[in-house]
Image: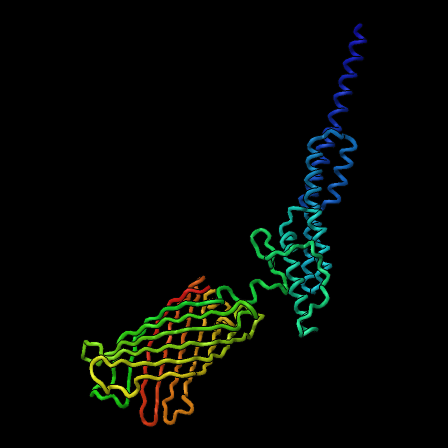
Length: 389
């Protein structure tokens, strides 16, 4: 009986020792796999875990780690495909880029960079197709497509963002060809005005007071908003120095047809140059004494040019200067066929700053009328606030 007990005890000790040794080996294998995972050696980690699971298929730690290795491996492969797609986009091979991105999303559906590039690729392809059409068929007949599949969808995203950092798509346009709020403008201006005449009947030939101006312009939606119309009205209530009474009121108005064109359209802000055909009105009301000014009423057609450009932003890439610009206008009226009728010119130079839909301006305006030896000038400093559509 004693012999049997000793034999049973020996068997139990052997069994326990045999189970401890494999358990220690399994723990060592899992730690090795974790180290390989931290070093991004995914294939070696997978091989280590698969070998471990052959020996112990129910090991939960090994199964969990295997799932993590597979997930990280897919993310890495997806990221590599995304990088390849970016290279193809840079070389304008959009169809190949599309295939890479499709594979990247299938492997890792959580790859936000690939998803956003995938959505933006259709827009990039359309831009490329339009460029080819304009180059090969000036009449506007659509040229052959670039091969970008229609399944990509028409999305407005022009870049991909991963972990908060923007990944720009080379060749993509980040905003509309026509800048926002470039269809219409309504603007109100206040001005401090000086009026001067070399034939003024008063001893003091210089008068001044505040003035006001309202102007509105609208461009038709077709042809990239190049054709439009405008209306402006200015009033100057004037008085002589040292006299508190208003003695003159000047009214001026222009009804204009406008046409404009653009330069540097590939840039974020473009240079705008245009021409105007106006019908001009000028009326002076003398509230106190007749004969103070020579010109009481002038009306007739006139022509003009205008320009607007964010010139500083072309050299200083700052967000502030992106919305800051310079503008100018010049109009000339000459009454042809009316003998010694007067001519007039108007010049405006100013700076503007756009804040969303609002435009704030500061400028100098000169309005001059001349006939033979008589000359009258109205000059003012304008502060304006406008609303754009």
